[in-house]
Length: 110
Image (cartoon, rainbow, N blue to C red; front, side, top):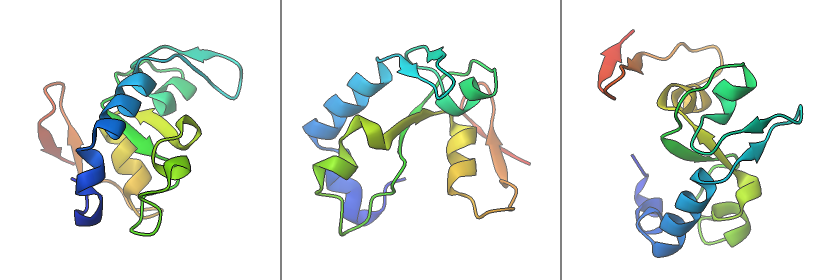
């Protein structure tokens, strides 16, 4: 769920267009392989094809940068991820996620 300062941004036409365009692009991984459109980039790097559901900001949005197009909308700051990878990216280092998601997107305690 978006933090209060970012709600307007995530409902903006600019974000909706950027998100859809990024989801639809193949992405070249660091090893040169091509991650297909709509697939989780982190899972792909581990040899797994999993559908992405979230476009994640590598540099997280803050009240200070949410209006900076280079941070908020530039493809170089975006990454497609599945829900499990997104949870890992946002959990404290070394902390195990407390929940996962089943094939229907429902929260499952770990």
